Image 1: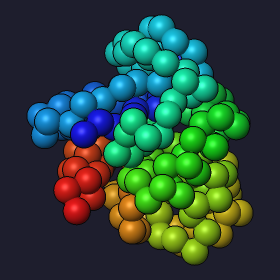
Image 2 (image 1 turned 30 degrees about the vertical axis):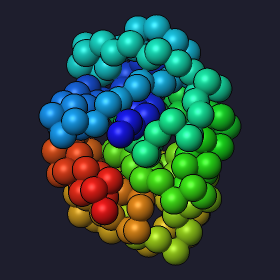
Image 3 (image 1 turned 90 degrees about the horizontal axis):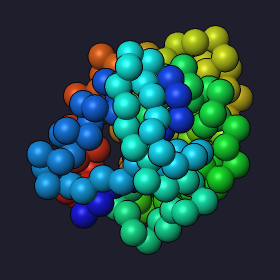
Image 4 (image 1 turned 60 degrees about the vertical axis):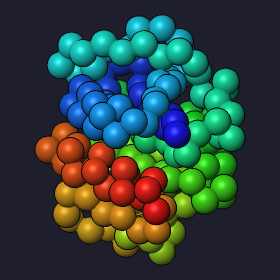
Length: 171
């Protein structure tokens, strides 16, 4: 089993990548990292990660799900990525796990998959506005699972977020 981790090329939130990635690997789940560009991506706290592919290179058939990592860079680099938004929609339409944490649930909202669903997001004014505009039933709790969609509200929720995704994959 393999998951795709989507990150911004800069200013992704370190714990939101590292904590779930470690949990997935410990559960025997392989991961690939994709971004808007290939190469070294840098987190807000100095963590680095290698994106081995761009969103253009992703084939959803190769993965059990997608996890979109948050952080300040997600608003700048991921919210407007038409390719990532289309990729998220494809995973969702195939019934695969679609997950996002912190500011990244906005990508799911923009993909049109949160209308009428329960979700959470980091409570920045811009993110809350985007989620409500998409018709999301916004909850102010750390982790929300609604069918195959999992959202979390920030770095403090990273471990619970990872555990919820692993549970969904085992269903």
